[in-house]
Length: 166
Image 1 (cartoon, rainbow, N blue to C red):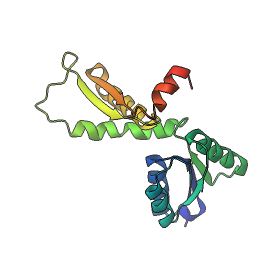
Image 2 (cartoon, rainbow, N blue to C red; image 1 turned 60 degrees about the horizontal axis):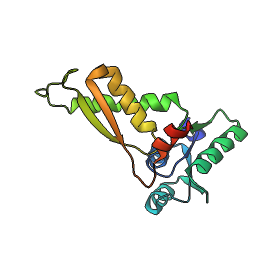
Image 3 (cartoon, rainbow, N blue to C red; image 1 turned 45 degrees about the vertical axis):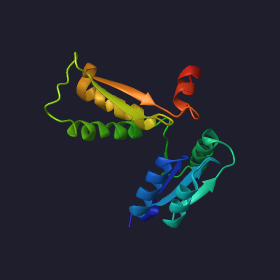
Image 4 (cartoon, rainbow, N blue to C red; image 1 turned 120 degrees about the vertical axis):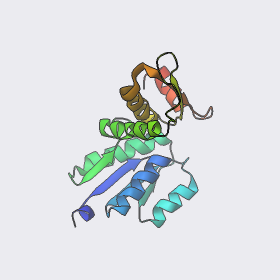
């Protein structure tokens, strides 16, 4: 079939690589996940058990993503797609769909308006998923929603990115 001709490549140390790799394999596509030295062993093993090619890099997350991006550019094949967590509008908009699910779980008797905003706490890693979810919530609720991002103090990727302009 057509799916077997396609390949998806992603750079990740965590959930994005796991979800993209497993989804691609479930659809019959080839999948390649580039991981940094900080990748969690059980995630790497699960990917390999499901037929995902895992490429390990000794450096950090940034190196793994850049190596994956460079490889796809070198191959230049229209049948290979790089899922770019840092630069993809499609991925951001896909994440925004989670706002519908979040709002469907909101009890109807809870009053939400500009005087009583909905405050949503979202865990944050690199920031792609939280940004998409926040955008989706903003599109659906405007000023009636406030989003707070929480990230680990030992891995402050989002705050460092904002502070340095990366």
